[in-house]
Length: 167
Image (tube, rainbow, N blue to C red):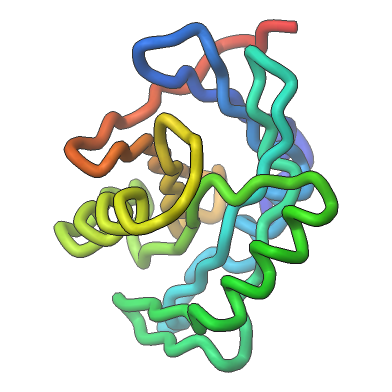
């Protein structure tokens, strides 16, 4: 597990606006718990946010489910259960804003399939968002390495980490 200082909220600047995406401690704890080690398969889940503009706060992330299909370099979630979870979280005032998954590499980078899947999800979903978010969690033990990107169906933007959150 990461040292506690690596689980402090992490902030990323969204493109073309003054909004910031913040991963809270609960989200980072899930990411840290499911980081791939040794020959473990990929894990993943959904990202749920609350909006307090200009902050978009990731307050809940789903953990992998036993019915997901998982391999060393591929993760296929149970989409039926994910749709149910999206409806449940929406009733609690949380909005589905994207997905996360792990990679078996210290500094994660998206595959072509990752990029295509997020673009397709954005286009096929009913929502009023400017972007869907993809977070990929690396397997480095010392620090929690993240790739975070915003997808609008036509392109993607890697998000830069902010030094400090705007309040």
